[in-house]
Length: 270
Image (cartoon, rainbow, N blue to C red; front, side):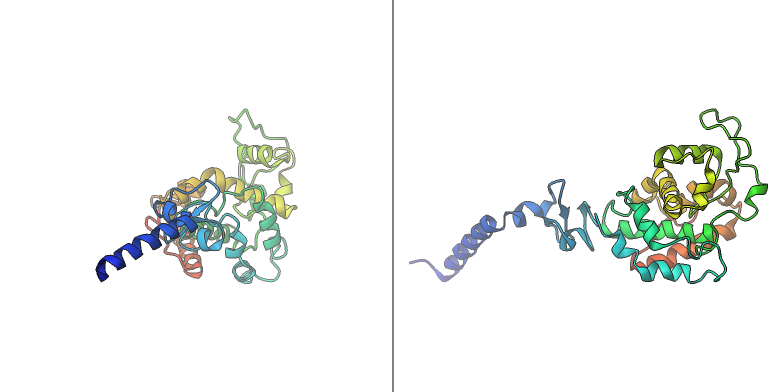
């Protein structure tokens, strides 16, 4: 005769075997050895959809298509509303234009965990807010009076009569950035830099181009928001050069992290 405790043990073993056969991913997923197309959920299981790729996602294609769910109308418009009604960027910078531009950069806001995604989005919009004055400015104030032509750059030589001053959400500047961004995105950055101030989708693409080439790996690898400040405008702001502008960028970053419900992490100043 089998004892009561032994019966319970056998029943538990039998149930575990049955569950393993019916739900094999419950067993194989516990160590997060997921297929490339799947996410490892916050509870350590493999799968797809919000339950696996959403909040708390550990690895895989976390938030693979949810940037639009994070950058809601409410989030985007809360930034734009703070700009004066007469601002030239008031109707130029739109969420629709941002989302359209985003299609060319599917890795933005989709790398790492759900919290990593939110931190990257918060960081990007913190810089955009500072650079454009809450989506007010399309072009740099007094930009035409400034010289952003690096004549030593032979790959992207300046075109006569063209200005490479700040334009767009990250205020793209310098001939080599216009040339390189144009080559990547598909416009003549050297001969037609002004398109960044007239086509709002191209404008957002230049901001995302700069971000993905200079900031994405920094923020997603955990180096902190401060390192992105150095990448965007380091020589003019970091290491005590202009602590007030660093403070302004950090303020926006903290604010957006708070709105998105994510810890801002360490190393937020440069």
